[in-house]
Image (cartoon, rainbow, N blue to C red; front, side, top):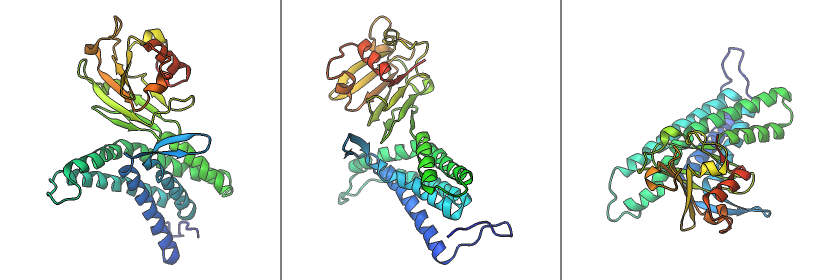
Length: 311
């Protein structure tokens, strides 16, 4: 079942089984995409035998979207696959608008979902959709392009290689999470993620922007914190970085107090903090269960393991 451009320069019209399969794949793609963002706030564990992974529930259906675009590319061509990706972008915008609209009207007393529960369940989902749309679009379009590049290179053979290769590389693009202006929730997932902060998005000294990172992997080869743009005038040295970073505990969370200009040179100064980064559930991990008692020791360990990226 393969559909190439017709002799008249257009695509062969779909009909019968080909049309139904196409619609089914489109439906699975759009359903997986929307559900991924709606359930992203629930976190769970997956025991892979050699390691227990903590990941967002949204990480379970999301890989299906790459599989579907590869199938669409293989059967119907890259033009139709790209069209579905753009439709997914439009559907995500619609979902974002629908979530916002639902929050504008108060719930009736008999509603099984009151305003507070709606806010807790869907407020961050809308932030996840807004934050991930650009990364989604770039990753999916790259996936389609890579799939067809390798298809031409292998002369249509080795479907498994094209499928897995394009998916892995495109998902690497979708694994850079950027903290924007204001207070953001950054959610990692299975695999290695880079959490990046930019100078323009920080707060002001004494009134910091407060971002939270869920599912941070502190193991060697796991996630990374990219502070190169946020920190100004720092060097890649643990002692120097104590002028910029101070670590505090909040329950099981590790809170990184940041002075982008190096305002902790004379010791920690709360009035110089213009950004905080909360690593949920990571205090024991980054302090090696209390073995590291100073900022310099924590920073040195992060640098040694490649978890902290600075200039």
